[in-house]
Amino acid sequence: MKSYLSINSLIPSFNKVLNVPGDKSLSIRWVLLASQAIGKSKAYNLLESDDVISAIVSMKKLGVEILKRNGCYEINGVGLSGFRHKNNLNLNAGNSGTFARLLCGTLAGNVKNVKVTGDASLSKRDFSRVVKPLELFGINIKTKKNKLPITITGSKYLRPIFYKEDKGSAQVKSAILLASLNTPGETVVKSKMSRNHTELMFKNCLKIPLKLKKYKNYETIKVEGKTNYKGFNYKIPGDISSAAFFIALTLLANKSSLKMKNVNYNKSRTGIIEILKKMRAKIRITNIKNYKGEKVADISVVSSNNLIGINCPKSLNTKSIDEFLIIFLICARAKGISKFIGINELRQKESDRLKIAARFLKSIGVQVDEKFDSLKIYGNPKLKIKKQVVIKNFLKDHRVFMMSCVAALTLGGDFKIYDKKSINSSFPNFLDLLKKLGAKIDNMQLN
Image 1 (spheres, helix red, strand yellow):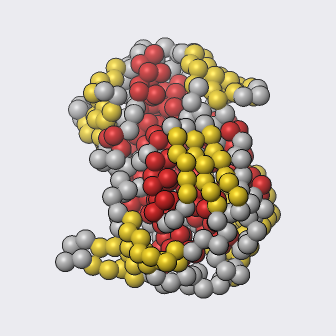
Image 2 (spheres, one colour):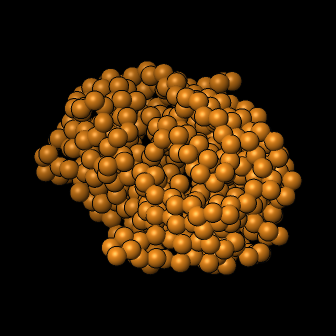
Image 3 (cartoon, one colour):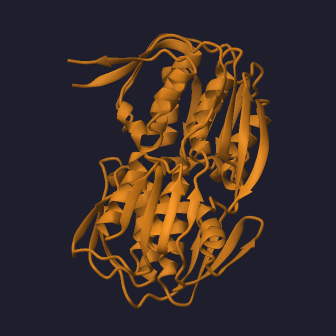
C-alpha cells in the first residue's frame, strides 16, 4: 500500500530550540576508520540513518565487532588490512554515494573479492572518478561502464601515488586517503578545495603522519601509509546539511525564530550561511568551539521578509553542494534575480539536482533558466502557492522530499508528497522535528 504526505496549511509562528541529528559525513567516516583501528572506539550521537547503518552492516560482514550500548556505539577495530570474511562477499551501500566511494578506498589492502552494490538510484551514478585513482594503487576493480556493481580485489603490494583531483570532490579525495592508509610510502593528493573531514580525523583523532599545504585554489595532502593507529572516541556534532532545512523553514515562516545547538560549523561546509547572509538573512553564529579539529557552533535564525537575490560566487559552490536545493527555494522568495554558475556537479548527486531544481521551481510558479552548469532564478517576495502540487517520481531523493515539505509549510498550496522513506537515508526524524515546531502533516494511504 502506497502512502503520501498531505500538507495544506502553513506552519504557525514558532520560537524554539532544536538539536539536529549527528553529521552523516562524520558518522560514516568514524565507522570506517574505527573499524581499522587497533582497540576499542566509541561514538556518541552517531546518526542512525540508512546510509550509516549500511556502513555498520558492511563492516560487520567484513569481520568487525560493532555494538550499541546505552545509546553509544562501540567498535573493536581489526587494524589495517585486518578484515576477515569469505571470498566474493557482497556489500550493499544502499543509497549512499559517500559510503560506497569511501568503501572502495577502504578495501585497498583487502585481498579477497568484494562486490559493492547499491539501490537503483546509486547504481545510476558515475564511479569512474574513484576507479581511476584507486587502480593506480594497484587495486583490481571490475565494473560495467563505471557504475555499480563494482568488484574490488585489493593487494598486499600497493604502491603510493600522486593524484590531481580537479572536481572538488571530497568523496574522491577521501577514497584516496583511505587507500593510502594501507599503502607503504607517501601518497600525495593535489586537490581542489572540498570538505576536509577525513584529513581532520587523520590528524586530530588518528595521529596519522599528514602534511597539508593550502594554496589559493587548491591544497596538497601528503600521507605516510602503513601507520597503525589506536581506537578513538568521538562525539558527533549536528549536521549542517540537516540544519539547512530548518534554517530555510524559519527564514520563510511568519514571525518565527529558531536556535540549533552544537552544529558542525566546518569552514568547508558553511557555504549556505555565507550565501544567505549575502541575501540579508537574519542568522547569528554563536558559541563557536573547536572539537578535534572541527568547529562546532549554535545557529540562530529569525524570519526574514527582505531577502534579496544573489549572484553566487563560484568559490562557494563546493561549500554548499548539498544545500543548493534548499538555497534555490529561498531564492524563489527573494527580491530580484539569483544566479548560480559552475554547478554541474549537482547533476552527479542522488539525482540530477540541477534538473530537478528547475522542474520543482517551475511547478510552484517560479521562472527559471536552466543550462548545463548554471541556474537563474527570478525571485518573487510575494510568492504564494494556490494550487495542488504533487511531488512524485523525483528518484526518491531525500533532499527533494525535505525541500518539498519546507515549501508546503511556508508558501501554501495543497501538497501531496511521496517517497517519505527517502529521508531514512539522512534524516529519519525530520518529520518529528517539523511537528515539534507545530507543523500539521497528515499521512495518507492509497488503496
